[in-house]
Image 1 (cartoon, rainbow, N blue to C red):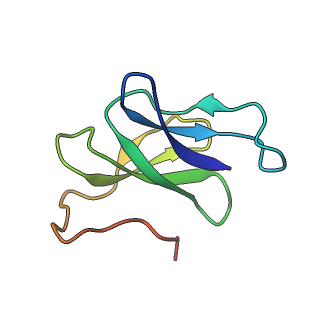
Image 2: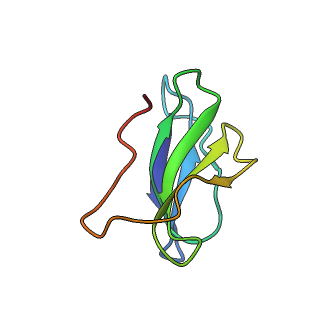
Image 3: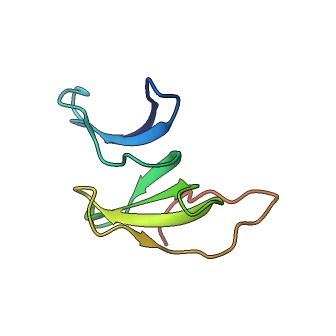
Length: 86
């Protein structure tokens, strides 16, 4: 499963761990603050919120943390979080 974890430096990073028991955690992101990871229906992509561009936007990366791409270019000040894939 994927989750956001507060790091020693105070940043929040996306982590991936064994869904069965939470073992073998590994960090998928390492820049800015990253939150609310959610898997695509096929399990190959993870959408998440990040301020890596200087503002909060929705980003997507493959399940190994690569191929990071910006999905939005505007953030609603009232808030927007990727709650699920449609």
